[in-house]
Each structure stands twice: as C-alpha cells, then as structure tokens.
Image (cartoon, rainbow, N blue to C red; front, side, top):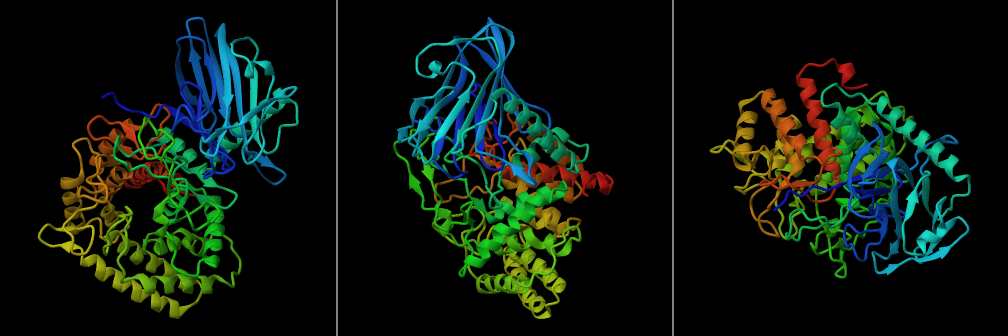
Length: 596
C-alpha cells in the first residue's frame, strides 16, 4: 500500500480554519465557528461535501508552501502550457485597538508563466452535506443562500463563469473573496492586496516576538503558527484539531470529532506557547475557564464546546462516505460524559503562571480564593475515584497513574497559588491531596519489572507514564527514572522510534497505529535522563513524518510511516516544540534564547 500523507495545508485567523488541498480545493471549512457544519467538506465526502477549487484543464502537478513565518498558503499549479499561483489566507491584523479576524476566505490567483485555462468551482453546502446552497447571480458577486446565514463570493472574474460550464484563460490576476454574513463592500483588488500585506506583517511580527532557539527553527515556527490558530479567540477555547472523523487507522472505526476544547490538551498548548514567550493565549483561556468554573456546579468535564456548552452529543452521519470511505463520520464526542479526574490538575497548572509569574499583572481578584477552594473541593471529592484516563476508555475505569500524576502536580500548583493568596488552610488541604496522589502513583509501581504500570493492579504499560519523568515526579537522574524509561521503550517503542500509547486491547481492540505525541514525549524523557544523543537522533527521525508543509497528524503507521488521525493535530505540534525546548535546555543554551 502506498504511503498515505495528508496533501494539504491550513489557513486560519483564530475565527476559523480552512484546509486547502494541493490541487487548490478547499476540502474542509466550518462556518461560522470551528464546530459548525462544514460549508466545504469534500475531505469526508467528495460527492456531498461541495467544492471550492481553481484547477486547470488537463493534467497538472502542484506544490504548496507557506509564505515564510506566516499562515498564508501558496499553491502553485504547473501544466504543459503554463503555471499559476493561488495564495490563500484568512485576514488577521490589528484594527481599532483589537484584532480584525473576519469570516472571510481570500484567494488570489496570479499567472506565473505561459497560458493556463482554469475552471473556478464554488459550490458550498450546509447541514453537513445534506443539501447544497443555492446560487444567485449578482453584478460582481455570487450569492449563496440556504445555510445559517448568507455567503457571498465577490470577484473580478466573469460571474457567468459560475453558472455556465467552461474554462477561462488566466491573464490578469483574479481575486476571490468568500464571506459569511457580512459581504465585502470595498474596492476588491486594493482591499485584497492591503489585507494580504497586513496579514503577512501580523504573522511575521508574532513570530518575531517568540523566543525560539536556533535548533530546528523551521519546524518550531510552523508548529507555533499551527497552535496559534487553534485558539478560538472569541472565547479563549483551544481545540484539539479542526477536523472530525479522520481515522486513526484504515478500517479501525476510531474516527473522532476533535473540534472541541479538551482541558488536558489546552494545558499542553498553553505550556508550549509559554515556552516560546507567548502569553496572551493564556489570558484568553483564563477567561474561558473562568466562565466554565462559574457555571459548573458539579464535576468538570474533560471537554466542552468552544463556547463552553456542556452537551456534545455524539451522532453518526451515515449518509457521508467518510475519509477515503472510512466510516463512521461522527459529530459530537461522547467523551464529554466521561469521568477524567486529571482535569483539575490541568486547570490549576494552566493558570498557575497568572499567580506566580510577575510578568502578569492581574490586580486584585476577590474571587480567586473562592475559585481555588472550589477546585480543591472537587479534587478532594475525586482523589480516590476511578476514571476513564487520558485515553478515554469507554467501558472500563481504573485508578490511572497519569490521572494521579496530575492530581499530584495540581495539588502542588494549588499550594503555590494558595501561598500567593495567603490562604494557609488551602495550602494544608492541597497537601493532603498531594500525599494521597503519591500513594496511588506508588501503588502502580512494579518492583520486579522496575516500572510504573498504567493503573493500580494492572500489568499493562502506557506511554503517558513518561510524564512521571518529564514532570519531575521521578528525579530524572535517578536509577528509578532510567529503569522506568527502559521498560517503556522495550515494550512500546517501535524499531523506527515511534511509540504506541499502549498495546493492550481497549474498547475497539488493540491499537494499530502509533500516537505521535508519545514519541515526542519519549524524546523529552530521553533528554531528561541525559541520553541526549538518543533524543536528538530520535527527534530528527520524527521530523520525517511531517508532510511537505511540516504539518503533523495525530497517528503514524509503524510499517510504512503513513499519516493518520485528525490533521493537523495540536497535540503533535505541542510535542515537537516541547521536545526541542527540552533538547535546547540540555544543550545549555542561554536562557534568554529559551524564554523571555
């Protein structure tokens, strides 16, 4: 079987993310929000998903690249007779003391050489492909009706082209501006060129304000840009991925909707952005968590919608064929019903810098003690409870080592926050939780095999326990840490340096693909215990599993290196940046190159 690679890039502006295939088609775009119906979704069904493409007549080849240090994507098309370039971007720049980030997809088509006959197709759909939007002719635009709100394509090319079959000769630059809700009412060419300049400048300025070492800069910069646009700035929520139902492995049935905010994933993303000196994302996320905390009287869910909605009822859309005919296609995610008790620790760790880092000036928060006490109370109520764990097992619960680790780390964070707030009673209560968490973690230790298993009373190993080393629960210089790492790599590492989450059967049988962030965790752990040469060698090999745009998927097939799972996966890009950061620290780079 030929190696499978996602041949597409993404653009976004913290309001939406669109996927552009190497053939110029917009194969995935959800409007008006990350978790809305797709208006283009041919990624999940080429017949019912609509189309927005700019293709030549006849055979062609293509290549994609980003304008350096930006989220502006260029697709170049080459034919026997000529070549042209499609520049795609989502406008984002400062305007009126805030960010301008409209629901506007801009496409600029320009001739490179020769003569190209092109066909521009724009057929949006709605209700996840149940129906096409109707098209209506305007003077210089095409109006699309039938969705939640009006969409409009404003262009300088002949409008009749969208209503009659045929191609046109590309001579002058073509501009295509697709808007949702609010039409473009401004000069077309001048506006596009102005927006392109300002958007390019915004992204380059954002990258200039990051603190990135010289190691593997291209990969780290691309990963940082990917993570940035996975935050829904309107609320501060951070999504795991912009896609749904891309299978973890062909025929596996492990097709999940990741367009939601996992508290766990958000912690990792924020920690990573802090490593490169970006802070505003944390402040946005603090507002998101604050709103959830105010409205959540019971236990925290593992995930919420980007607006904080609790119910994410899982449905299967049987009428869609699925990615490469892999069904089911799912929207919603049943994991919102799960008990996952690591979330409290991740909330505390995510917001800890707001209370301990003097770069944040938050003023007096009269509600801080009440908020902290509420989180501690939730931890007290759940510290001795079984849960579904990080991998969200659906039909069984355990005392998971990973969960207990984050209860331990969360308790430490709670103690630091409580000291900052001068709340000694909360320090004491958090200390009790910490000791209980240690007891559970140590109950997972197998002294004969010299390894921590994934849960109390279980013989199975789990890559998530690499975090025992990374988070300094185990002293990285200790024999205990080194033996734990050796046992994990002996059982879970592949010959090519990839890592399985686990190898025991779960609700869907045994996993058939490796989980990429686990391999990056492995790199971190190697660096922590002093095996720096192994860390660098493994990391450099992992870079080969990106597509041509340095974008990484969720899963990798051990045998042929194929990309699978949702794409691009925030988790994987988090893992990459953290691995480079850990290697850079071990190489002894000056701290000013690592953080501000």
